Structures are given as structure tokens and as C-alpha cells.
Image: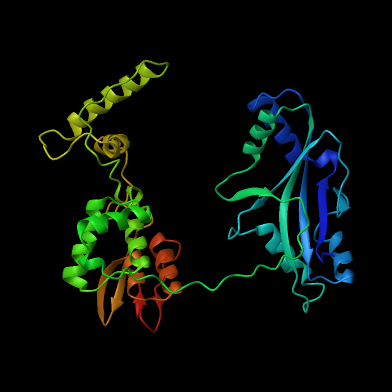
Length: 359
């Protein structure tokens, strides 16, 4: 028999805000008018908790008696109700479960409970299979969640496998192009094959060794379209608009962009039409008109980048926040640099160690 206890907690009808919101979304947004009722319950699976602590936590940690109804192990629902539960994917942080575990420890600090949560939905009404799938798609974000099994598990303890050693691509730097292409295809990389060839030449001529899987994955991440903006920085030479409701406003906006860029870039031949330029043109126009005077400007376009003056070995240098981390500076040093640069504090911060002073 499983040692896992299961608890369902449901807001009483006057306080069931989430259930009402979901009902409105299903009937209005999805247009499913045959739904007659919606219930939302929080499901707790609990293990490694004594009966005494469990009883105390039932009406203090897991629920609030004035506003919640509590069901142990199972709850009643109609025979025709559509019931499913949603849980976080493995590896996703579950704030509710983590908070419950910490709160339960106040009753007995010697117990180390394991708690996992899910959200259970009960949909009443006549539904087709297609409508059920639409409701499920509305409730489940596949990026961080999945449908949960209704069966109570034997244990909640997760056993993690010891990871294998990092793969080294033996012979990478001397691979023939055909073999390199085969390896490239097998890895599912975001970078182009030309990028992959460039990496091979680098490791062959500069590093004089074979790369690891980690190195290839890191390069692929930072050479992806997301970081290099290859799509947004691609020159647009032939722009056409298809027929549709928004064709005229889109064409008018594009013509306004062309007019503004002709004014902003007058006499320049190094600028071309691209999505990145289109996105920034309004800002450049406002700046040219003197309406954008508090803009932060630097060669680094990352929104999280700031410049901080740092005294290193008796010499003051200007560093980007990312560069501070490359110097193996402590996290709190970087944090204070961020605070001081933002103007929240104006006093200098003295610090011994890698950073002598951050002004």
C-alpha cells in the first residue's frame, strides 16, 4: 500500500474566483456554451509526514477552513464530469509545494516531508472529445506543465541518475567534411553548417584539441538567431503586403518608416532596411526631435548591461556587468555594483578582495 497521502483543497463557492474565471474563458473565449459548471481544486500529495503533523497541517498549511473545503484521498464528482489534473514538468520549481514543505517543518523540524502539487479541474456539461481537448490545451502550458496521472504514486521520492562524463568529440578537428556534416545533422544545432566548420578550424588551429559536447552546446546557444539576431538584421530588399484587413495600416506604417529613415539616415549609405531597424526607428525619430533625452547609450545592446567603474590593482577601469563576472568577482560585489550604478545608493562601497572599491 502506498505511504503517500493525498489532499484536495477547493475554494468554497463564494470564494471560487479561479473557477469562475476559467468558466468565463471556456464559455466566452473558447465559445463552448454547453459547460454548466467549473471546479478548481489544488491537489497535494504528501509523504514522510507523521499522522500528528499531517492533521495539524491539514487545516493550517494546506487549507484555510473559513474559505476552503478539504477532501482527503478523493472527492465527489458527477459521472459525466470531465476531470483532469495538471502538474509542473520535472525540474520546474513548484512554489506551492516548496512553501508547504517549509511551513510543515514548523510543526516538527525533525521531519523532512516530500510534497508535490497539481491543479485538478472538474468540468460539468456535455462535451465532445474535441471540446475536451480545447479545454485541456487552455489549462496546460506545455512549456512548464503536463497532464498529471490520477493514480496515487507509491512514493514521491525522486531518484536521479548519475550523469555520464561529458562527451569529447574525438577526431573532431581532423574530420573530413562529409563526416563533419553527419555529426552536425545528428546534433540538431541552431547554428549553420558554415558555423560548425568555423568551429572546427578554430579548434584545429588555435586550441589544437577536440571540443567537448558542452563547448559545442554553449557556442550553439550564443550563436543562435536569438543572440545574433540574424533574422532581424537580415537586409529586406523586396517587401510585399498580401491582401487582408490590415494591409492598408501596415503599408501606411511601412511607408512612414521609409520616410523617417530617409530623414534620419540622410547622406548615409551603410544602413539598410531590416526588421531590427524598423523596430528602432520610432525611438531614433523621437531622439532626433529632442523628445528622448534620458536614453542610455552604449556599444553593448543587451538591456541588462551596465557600465560600472571598478578599481582593480590600484587602477580604475570601466567594466560591463558581464565582464565583472568573467573576472571571478563575487556575486554580492556585482550586486552592489548594480545598485550603486542605478542611483539607489550614492555612498561609495568599500570592499576587500577582488574589488577594492566600487564608486
